[in-house]
Length: 302
Ligand code: PRT
Ligand code: ZN
Image (tube, rainbow, N blue to C red; front, side, top):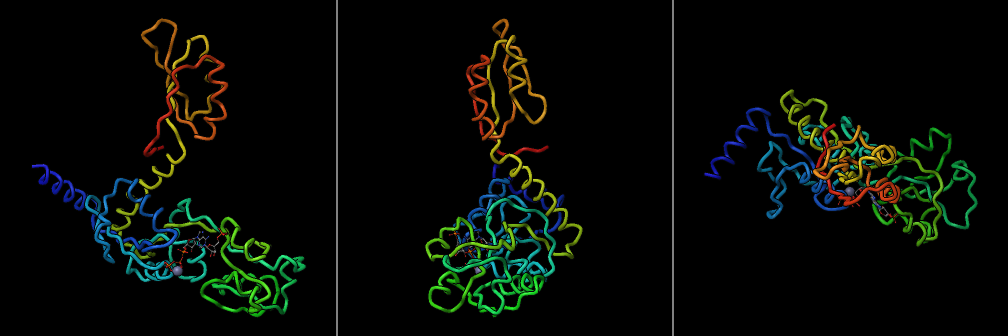
């Protein structure tokens, strides 16, 4: 009986939302975990037990195509996948034509010029005629051209950070996140050329039906991202403290206030930024708030 109900549910989804959408996701590496977590938080069930190249979701018209991140922009541009999750750095480097639909808020990093600690560096013109090692030649070439600098670009596919130490280059152009890789290789970050994060990209020629499925997915993704770091906060307070407490609370809209069975007391409910909550908790207690409950929010639809 339960199985029949589930099957019916899937079928209903498919008829109301049209075709199955194919999303390209990094098979392993830095973006895989966050992407899969985001999909899971949207309520989409994907069996990751049998790790094949193509996996279908069981309760949403979506199939996941697992690829190396380098292959994702091209696969989406040519329509083999309908949408994909990839670093903006990778998309920019490949320069393929795909629509950036949403910034996803994870995989944050930057593409920067870095030079040996002891090297004097005023600006990018200091690298005129010098050798720069990178895995991102297209973005670097464009940056140098815009600034009228001619340099020798050495394209290497990995361990770019060691290339100055071994005498292969005078400077590097590479991904920086915490900066610790640069420090441990005696390098100093100079120009930040591109700020990157994971983005959801889409094939330009999506059918109307597929675009509809993407919009449904996007709606869920935005609800999950909207709830990130937000907490649902409940507290009890004497009615006479209400004005002071409402002044302290920077809620999304006006908070809900409900009377309690005990005369002269009320319950206040609101949604707060987690960071903000820890800043104002002292003032809430001072104002007389008691029994403060802080609850996680799964998704938030504004
Ligand atoms: O196998 P596949 O080709 O799929 O993966 P990959 O090895 O090419 O890529 P992967 O998994 O390393 O990175 C995927 C994406 O994650 C990148 O394209 C970026 O958009 C994003 N990202 C975020 C990062 C980093 N942070 C990062 N720190 N990519 C790489 N790094 C590396 C960087 O190259 C350097 O070696 O980490 C080092 C620097 O880190 P810090 O923290 O020491 O500065
Ligand atoms: Zn790669």
